[in-house]
Length: 468
RNA sequence: GGCUGAGUGGCAGAGUGGUUAUGCAGCAGCCUGCAAAGCUGUGGACGUCGGUUCGAUUCCGGCCUCAGCCUCCA
Image (cartoon, rainbow, N blue to C red; front, side, top):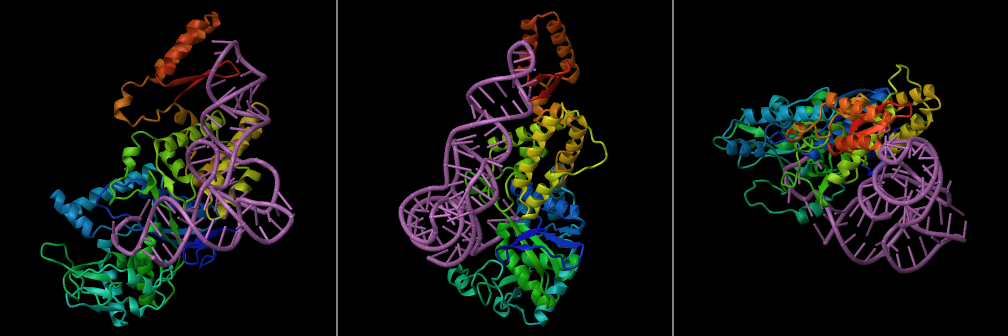
């Protein structure tokens, strides 16, 4: 039985979908004005694992992840760059999708954009005005009236009174209450704008997710996810908007992933301490980055460091070394390892524990490979299957082991030996060994090692190689 | 200040009221011409002070430290 930690109750709860056999899931995607950083990668990978696992349990999953392509930062950045908003957002939407693809993230079923959703956003604002949950201020902006939504704060565990006490006063705002938030912003001269009953303007940030999620998934759906920083106010506001506009409960399970940190500080665009996905992928394989993310529980903080990425790479080498020479047989036979894996994943997607099972299975494969090849093949198939549920171990082991970890780093590719050159060196060493010229043989091996090539003499007499 | 969450062995990171997490690194053995890989064994831990208990790293309370949210942010 799958249990999910629900931010609404702050407890693990048994998961029951609204419609048997179906899961409808919405995740807040990114605002496209810059490249994805590791924090974005984490959201994408975490929910990719959630989706893969839900599917493996037999659920028919509808996964929606939006793209925010209009907001103040986008407007500023486009102005800074001297490019149009659509050029900027198109560029970074494509970059984001490329990054996701390289990380092995299965694309969402629906990827709505705010600017394609203006009409449904306006329709939702109309309903909120009609039911008295929103008002037009003196400056023509439309605001949500938080005081009209009794359960405001239920997701973030905040009391309206506490929020008011700590609210920062912004004299420029025309709100009735500092907690009210904008649904429709009147355009200033030169700003992008859409016509509306309330004048030309653009949607506020929160309303787009309410409009897009309920349009794609219905007024009431199963899971809504995103980074922990969105819990308040973004998700709190989404609940307020959606439930006021539809009169129905909005979401049953809220999932929030923890942050990526650098030196124990949150990685974020505003702090400027972020590493972009493409930057990291110059030095590490996408699979290593994915392993690094999955090796921590999704709600825990994740500290970014080269050392942790190196560990991830070493772990993958161990897996692929075990899989090497044990090709897929086509038939999947599962064992107790799969049972244990499921028990871990059923416990709020406990991927570190699931990985521990994979490591145990790996040891079993290594034990079996020389004694019982049939069993080894079977276990290898099981490992590939379980790895697939986490989105890795699907590559050809030889390719993984012989592909340079930094193959994407242009500066290092030119110095890399070709496979043919390595084979030649191995043949020369073999000849030296046959002639008992171990000094000569070792010289060749040391030379290869110096260039990042590790030789392994197999029991049968064959020599295999891999890159460090 | 309010509200969350966290403090585990050299590092990363799960978990549990009494019995092996797991990976990397270390040590020893097997294997090897020597290595590498692999296997076997092994050392090393639960912020702090109290309480509950036959027994707590695990439950409860105080304290200390850290992070996050309360403002754009995944």
